[in-house]
Amino acid sequence: MKVRVRFAPSPTGPLHIGGVRTALYNYLFAKKNGGDLLLRIEDTDQGRFVPGAEEYIIESFKWLGIKFDEGVGIGGPHAPYRQSERKDLYKKFADELLEKGFAYYAFDSAADLEAKRKEFEAVKKTFQYDVNTRLQMCNSLTLPKDEVEKRISNGEQYVIRFKYPENEDVVVDDLIRGTVKINTSLLDDKVLYKSDGMPTYHLANVVDDHLMEITHVIRGEEWLPSVPLHAMLYKAFGWEAPRFAHLPLLLKPDGNGKLSKRDGDRLGFPVFPLEWHDPKSGEISSGYREKGYLPEAVINFLALLGWNSGTEQEFFTLDELVENFSIEKISKSGAKFDLEKAKWFNHHYIQQMPDSALADLLTPVLAAKNLSFPQEKVLKGVAMIKERVHFTTELWEQCHYLFEAPCSYDEQAVKKRWKHGTPLHLTEISKFIDEKYSISQMHDFVMDYIQSNELNMGQIMNSFRLALVGETKGPDLFTLIDFLGVDETKKRLFKAIDVIGERE
Image (cartoon, rainbow, N blue to C red; front, side, top):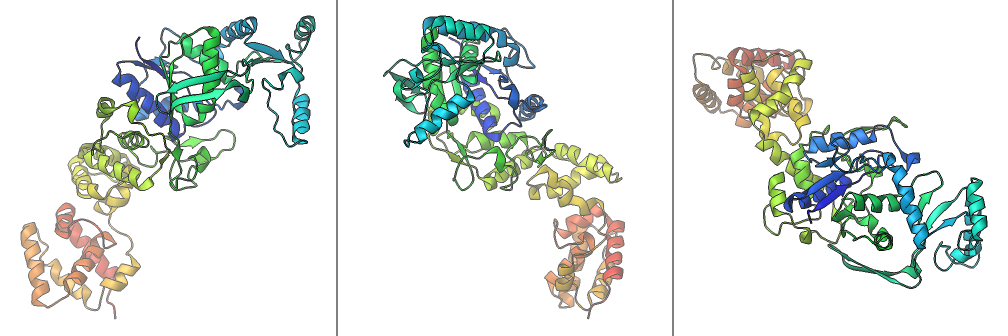
């Protein structure tokens, strides 16, 4: 049977980076095994639907380069792939469970359920709607058949609950966790269908996975408690269940708890792939794309949060990840998010970018500042500062002085480097900055001047750099002079001498 997996997010907000990792592992597993990956939108909970969330999910995967074979926005033989467009088909499956005795109608109101909870709390117990309590409740197991029919025909609110068999062990062989075993006496009779005509996640999920021929369900650890119910639903319908694999949690950097959506920006890094504008609160949450991360870096970093190739290799292209991926090498324990490692990966991938690609990112920034330079100049500039860049958003910060003369000078650097006599020495040095000399000759002349006048090398060279950059940073000084040209170099030098002046 051909491997078929799915990623099935709910459009209740932005896509969490942990969800991205889940989709990535599904993609790697599918491609490694010559299978298909589907994108299904699970929007049965209309009360939590957030406008724009579905579009955000699709755009995120486009940016990341994770391609689906079927699904929302793509189509395929099992369309529609949006659950709200499939709601008419779920009722017949709920009815089938009722007919087989694997489900029942429950008419308990919210007040009834709350009263029962308080009754249990009074004797220091926790109420659960299960095999031990369901015969104490208002449902089709305790009511005469004609009354059940009357209540339904009168439009009374109800839900359909799954009816677990008594004292039966549910055993599931998880590809990551191993054997998962639990007795039905410990499980609550979950709601499968609501009287508003919408199924709950549990019913819709199982029905769709079966109809869409899903062979493997690879999802987060938080769904592990649902495995017994899903396994029992497959059994109740008489369907072959897919193989299950529950991924480890993505943890906060300190390892203390799951990395949640609420941690976005609070911990100093994004937890969403793209910037998110909440349509309800107006709050803006940062995204990896807008923070200057490359999609290749995000993919590589995420792949190693919970999976290890078993080799020393750390940098993988998407194709190499597919080639090396094995679900058996996924860890059972949670993976701590490491911000410094994420930055390290991003720095590496920026270094691998062609200078032309970085120049394409810088050109619109220059245009926005009304600065115009030949493409060769921009290419040369990004090549000079590339090693210092960790995020694409840092390009202008790292190279602004190459294209724009400083309008101010770092006060601390001036205090430390600009000593009495500096203007005189820089004026003398300016005589060696001339087009008739090569860069190497200029270098030698300046070095000779410093040595023959018994000057402090660091002080003079840094004050020279301060005049050109506004700070004591940047590439090799004479490489910088070569980039700026003689005229621009002298212009900046004399401006600094004039603005900073003589110091006591």
